[in-house]
Image (cartoon, rainbow, N blue to C red; front, side):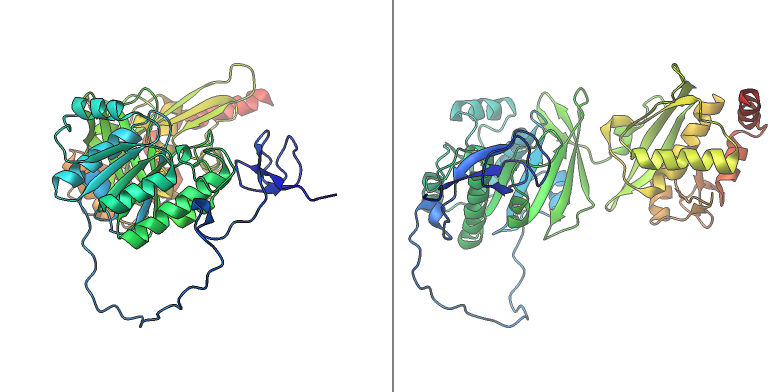
Length: 468
């Protein structure tokens, strides 16, 4: 019997199966196998290029670089340039992903207009919308006069031929899931098509010395759709994040060959498009300055930028006997660790209570330095006593109950002083910044400061004795 020319490829992870099944054996996803051709393709054959020809040998050079580094293109958007590491690098490929409706097309249209207005030959190719829709958006954003070359199409061969004739310095492709290469017998958006399209566009960027920005869709888990090889093909991977119902948007790099991966850009969505937020701390703090019980201000650092954000906690009696833990913007496992430390080292009881924790403004925090601020918010919620309104907190909490020092202390304290805060709860050795520092070497010192009479500890002890 002749061997079949068809295989089944998982659209989630790219694993190849000889026959269809409801569940992918590699990643465990259900109903993600799609039928594709099993015929091998040589490099470049996705566009019908001839294969099997003997090419020229490679030309080797010394490791030392004699020339000057290429100048970066400024997009005219400071927050985007910050995340890119100082601007867009020529001959680079950048992949931008985000949830539907978060503002990816708006951001990149503004970036394309900024590049064009600064003298960079820029093209914008859309495979999702008609030219009239892009022109209407540009009119609403006040960008209609920007000299951007606009085209709509999905045929990769046609797009590359047009770009080679146009010879732009920067190109925006929206999006790679809508493009298709005619050399592949697969539908647009499948693993084979996305991989081939990304490869050809990244190769075009290197050969034509053109900066290419690709828009990628994300899955329901928040990952860029398609095989992971797409992220390896490009030079930078940037996620555009935002909570529905909130105007704030966070731009975060997870891979960057030409800059840091810990920088963030903060935007606010308005009727006139995305506006930059050079001082994001003002967005994530309460405008009134008043603090309710359970609210603590964390002095964090994102990349080279200090950010002050409010952490809110609520402790309530468990309704059905089983305590619930709900977290937004922080790690659930780390919350469980902080609760265990507070119960074991400070004698505070959270066992029969629901605990809710939220980072205000839709920001997600991954710094261990937020431990002390979370602990302060939890103690304040348990005692129903607000923290001083001019107080910030930062520090890493160990399982032993020690509060460990964190980096960039001076930057955190200076940002707090600039925004009018007069006191900081911090690990031992923290000082400076022009504000008073209450050094807290152990978590018990924080509990004694926020609950000097020990009422919460007495209540926990009486509750446990009553249960016994």
